[in-house]
Image 1: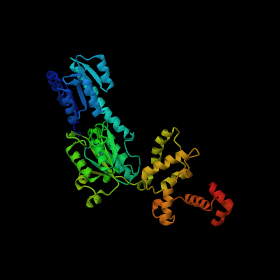
Image 2: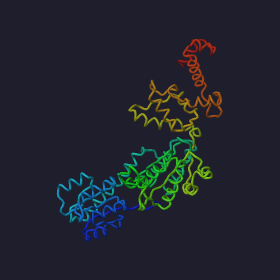
Image 3: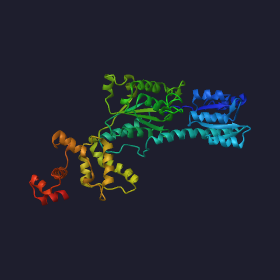
Image 4: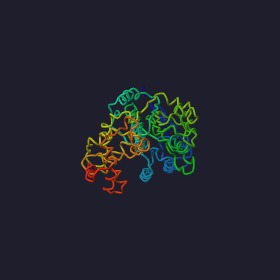
Length: 451
């Protein structure tokens, strides 16, 4: 069951009490409404109320509505303002449009026209939030995780069950396993799919920056805070907020986050008014949060609040049968970005990909394929195009090149090819010297290198 949408906030600024009373009575059922009768009061209520839309009269007892519009836009560029007047001139209308007003309504106006205008502006507000969200990440047309392994099939079954819920989700797994992809799939298959999906990686962010990103800040809240800024809790309202690497979040910010998700209310940094939100929270971590709670590095109450639905993303080495399908899924958008056909992968290269341990998981697979597409010289991705240095270095250091686990077993041709190339390099490119050390003829060495 979906929760009711949070009403958008509307500020009515007009010195005629009859106009204000009529508008308030008309709109109070669909909007959260505040009113002001003077320019001074409008600035004060705006700063406290943080409206999404303002109905602003052009003529006020203590100043011009155009001047008020300028000040409101200085506070927050995101606010939508509809100018109203019974005596407005063309010059004042043009000036207000230049300052960022959405439209102009002539008084006395038709209430049906007002309703249509507010509906359009309301959509503009939602669209702006969605655009901000889209700039924070790439959309995906997938509706399930690609793969045929039992681990992925189980995840896709779980995805269908949890997507329609409203409970928080905690996704665990190593870096690069696709926690962010799974979070977006939950959003895309939920009733919130048309609302924003916004994400934030908490790793390395200071307490101050985290608070500003999550909750926004008021103008003047700190040095260089020249304008009011919406936080992700506002941008993601009615949608989904994905917090990656939440285990790295500062403990004091954890306390604010817990309060916000439990009460569905928060305040901007430097703010005095509670704002409401209706977002769904998805968090991810590559740490053992249970151990962090025991060590005092993570709040236990927040951990148990997040741990309503718990999902573990498997490492790529645990689902190696999915690698051929993943290769195809990854290569298609890469080829589109580069403006070239999707290259085939040679059988030998695919065997090499399938036998690699992938410590960096799916993210490393994508990087290897992207690098191969950039450097390949033939029409297909060959084994020689795959740069898997981390595997050979870690194996050589740990076991002298000998496999310690099943997934570290490599094709013998690859092992020989790597050893031959390394031997020639160690001999400073001297083929005769390298062949003598390998106890084979130079012609045999040449043949091995060509192969």
